[in-house]
Length: 174
Image 1 (cartoon, rainbow, N blue to C red):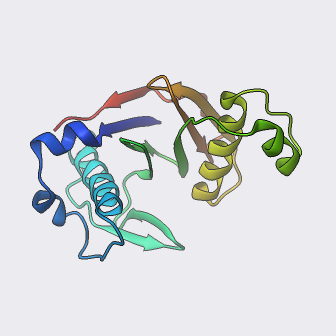
Image 2: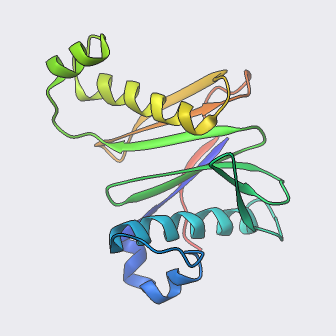
Image 3: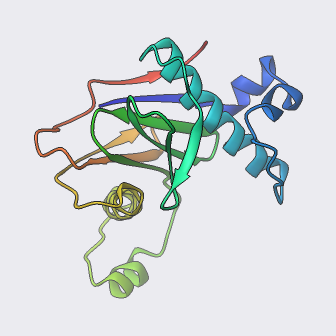
């Protein structure tokens, strides 16, 4: 598995929203922020598929509420939080979630989820794994979590039991 990410603030300094329209699929969005996150996510997936995986057809379709390449080739999962959009790529189904770690009432969250969260890392590892598993839509065989960019938690899950950790987590700039 490989994970690529884009910092949206830096991206928007060199690309305008008009450029992003071709990645929005003509969808309507409730806010500019949602439009930017969605469109950069699609840009990231299509660009990595072409540049890294040499896919010529990067048409994305929705199958069972999950985006995938129409003609296969590689599996992917997209997530965004704060100023980051990230995508995981693998040769088997995968799920990815990234969340900005913010101060929370860990006592209340521990009671709500019947877990003992001692820190932001404890809670966000639990939460991102939960969200990534929803995106996977299969039984999780393996997972990997890490603190990303100092105050984000990133979790990738896989249907592949031999998965241990991503071979790379890289900024994508194409």
